[in-house]
Image 1 (tube, one colour):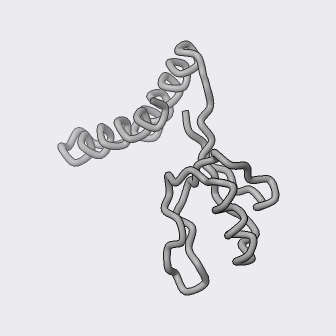
Image 2: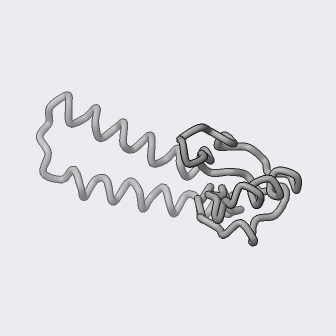
Length: 106
């Protein structure tokens, strides 16, 4: 499972992965989401006065925990869709949301 955290730059370590594009004040992308940060890049960000970055944290969870989370997602979506009609649009929306949420769990 992947979580996103915003960290102050002084807590960022080489090897951490950006969870979102890092842009300068003009909107130009400095580093793309998914980039693994090196010590040189972190030093460069300090020189640019970057104060915080969004970091992707991969959590190691057991298969039992992952399945429990999937069950929670299914139950929550069933609850949210409990009063929808039987139309095709409702089914497609439900299925799309379910697939998206389950994909996030892995």
